[in-house]
Image 1 (cartoon, rainbow, N blue to C red):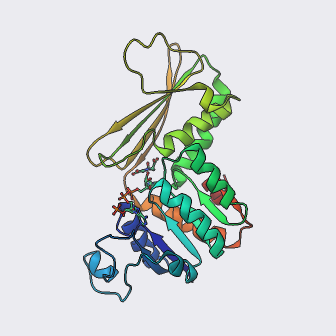
Image 2 (cartoon, protein in one colour):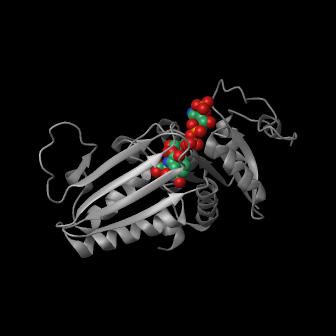
Image 3 (cartoon, helix red, strand yellow):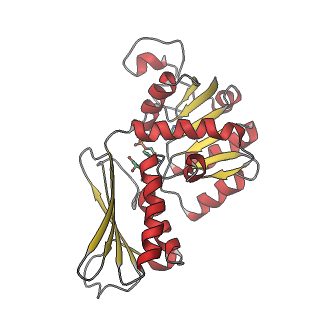
Length: 266
Ligand SMILES: NC(=O)C1=CN([C@@H]2O[C@H](COP(=O)(O)OP(=O)(O)OC[C@H]3O[C@@H](n4cnc5c(N)ncnc54)[C@H](OP(=O)(O)O)[C@@H]3O)[C@@H](O)[C@H]2O)C=CC1
Ligand SMILES: O=C(O)C1=N[C@H](C(=O)O)C[C@H](O)C1
């Protein structure tokens, strides 16, 4: 059994992960971690989640939790994941990062932790989106800049970062297909007198509202035709299953920072 700790246990993804770690024959839940001051701390996890007591108390003793685990899965917030990357590496356990919204400085700190630790990080852990990443790269390479690329994403009203991590993965793939750097061509959310579109730009647009789980369109708009690559997530279990698969895959990996493309062999 691979022992998995869940960081951010009370979150939307945290609770989904706990259910799926319980269901998986290859994994057991070693710890449920929340931030200091959280009202779940010290409570039985089962009761906190609205079901029967299970004899596991929610903790904020991070290093204690890591010491009794083989992997920690973390869908929380950038500052939490950056700190955890160094601690998981020091504890010698796998760190699966689903968190999005990182700055360049955050990403450098995570890469540094990946010199000694085993990290899998992806803005989207689903098979479908990672396939879409490969397709986006291929279509962008095939079409050239006379086709305008626009990425449109929709998420629930609670999401705090934009563009989504997935939209950025798709944008990176499109830019790579065109042998460009995304930072040089990204055009984020137009407003006002913007002037005509710059050829080669990759546009990003974010819808926020209601209970969307996550929807992404990559539009290639040419003269007389449009190609649209679309992924629609209808269940968060998709992301949790991917994260658990990553935690299992990385048990036998060498130190490094990996993506879901590595895990899925795409
Ligand atoms: N890669 C992927 O496939 C996916 C990525 N995500 C990303 O995962 C992240 C979380 O999303 P979601 O579950 O919807 O968000 P939630 O806000 O529901 O959950 C985040 C959880 O982290 C907790 N947390 C915050 N600080 C700490 C800390 N210091 N220690 C432990 N726990 C902490 C929060 O507690 P509190 O509420 O008390 O602050 C909360 O329980 C986002 O960045 C999102 O974009 C989401 C889905 C899929
Ligand atoms: O915040 C979310 O919910 C999601 N975040 C990820 C992202 O930023 O792309 C993945 C998924 O779309 C859900």
